[in-house]
Length: 433
Image 1 (cartoon, rainbow, N blue to C red):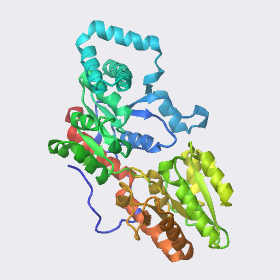
Image 2 (cartoon, rainbow, N blue to C red):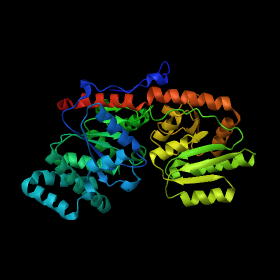
Image 3 (cartoon, rainbow, N blue to C red):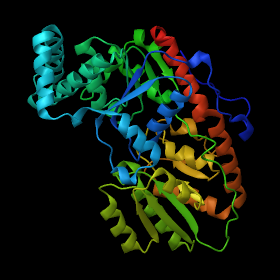
Image 4 (cartoon, helix red, strand yellow):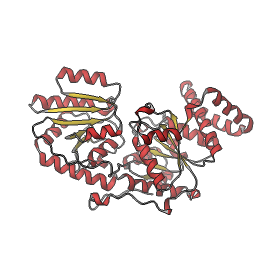
């Protein structure tokens, strides 16, 4: 079982070298990635992982259930190129979908009815659940037919929600194996409705982005399946995210940055409430929130009512977000529920001191007081105290920034971790060598 141990020593930036492409990683048979939305502005780590695997010699083809979340004119070149080569399941019209179902019934009835029975079993005699399961089966039928026509033999699915239900039903229907990368946290809270146990037990192998994620799968799956779970952490490219070490103007307000969807689980309201306390105590600050979501109107109203200097940037591209990061003094993610946020890794790689919460896999990324500060989720008092400490102690800010960067270089280094992922694929898919 591949995992990562705690470091004995920290690496330096010189150690963050991208692995060279070697014959060890060259694959002859394509591996299909199934994603819910690709490319997606908030999930650039999908794109980065695919591109890194290709650099190592793997042949990766991508299928996406949904179209990209923004028009081509708003995408960087790499994402436009990926859009052109991605198969979009829902892009097929109803006529084509009906034709695939009809020809499968006529030519491969055992395949069609095997999948249909599996979908009906997922419904558990609940009308709404059955209707959704049948929709997922229809998408799985389309996906499997595309894979069959292209000669693809293995499916790898990121996330364990509805997209993995499609992947599992496609696997059952067409008889090819599938694997998972599990992030959490939603599927950990609603095990039955996400069919988590079935997905885990049917998967050929599973990649977990944290020890916490693996523990949650162990909680629901029989012990005989534990040995197919591997911890392979996400990461950032140290050649893209690094400290600019610019001079800070001590007179200007402290710039507090939060990057994430504007939803309750990200804790932006807790951040604004903590900032309100600091302002009442006479501290000078400005909050910048990057992201879109249903809570924006409420958050803007709260900030205006309380006189909090807050800038709502809306959704930004990855490059635009990186530029905003360069101006930040402190990065805050006050989440109630998370996997392991890549946004935190990016800020840490740029030596920005970070404050987050004791939630899920975040303590694996940030060791409190060493690589950043952690506070209990939902605690306005604790978050305000942490922000006050950072504002009043420049040496603490600098020390946490340097240590956080080293932590990312050691454990959340994208090229290095994708090499670990490559070895997992090789271990479980020897037929593709």
